[in-house]
Length: 190
Image (cartoon, rainbow, N blue to C red; front, side, top):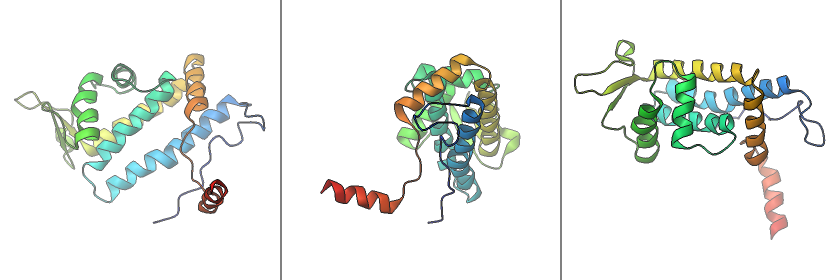
């Protein structure tokens, strides 16, 4: 297993009392965290040639962002609305039912979707039986563009910032843990 990059969020944007002191820096830090902890794993899965895992990871990453966008747990409606707001030329309901739910829960796609790799000319085309085609590399690029649109709006929308902060206060984010610290805590519990 290779070394994880040191990414801590929040870092300098919060004072000792846990209060946010710099909203722009807060968003910068979260964006850096998201890139280094979430996008990096998706990119690695693609680079090593995994075929279905990147679709699952992208679906989960969208779910993750939905929770910060809404300031609450992800639901079908929130997922659909997030996709419709930030992904161009995608149907949020279709992406939710045909890709997200089926891939995450059943490791397959729905009846109205086809996934492929290294076939950019097929991306977002429909086949004669009505199924929509997603090509991995273009889907990942579209995901990255949607993420950038979300972060751009997060920087200017008080409502989105409030939702984002509320979600962070409720759940936090996954950060690397020191194994020695975990051992110490486990020993204290005994």
